[in-house]
Length: 59
Image (cartoon, rainbow, N blue to C red):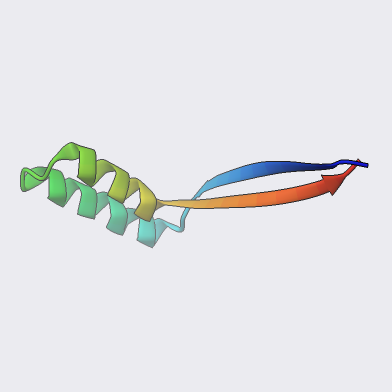
């Protein structure tokens, strides 16, 4: 028997107040001429709930 491994990535939007805060923070960063390469991923990390899970299954 060989165990099988895998990775599951779950991406879900957070609740509305936190999403509004993340969107406002990203818009403020872009408005103040912060680099978009930094502002957009940070805003997405605030707005989205990202979970990475590793799992093992025996066959």
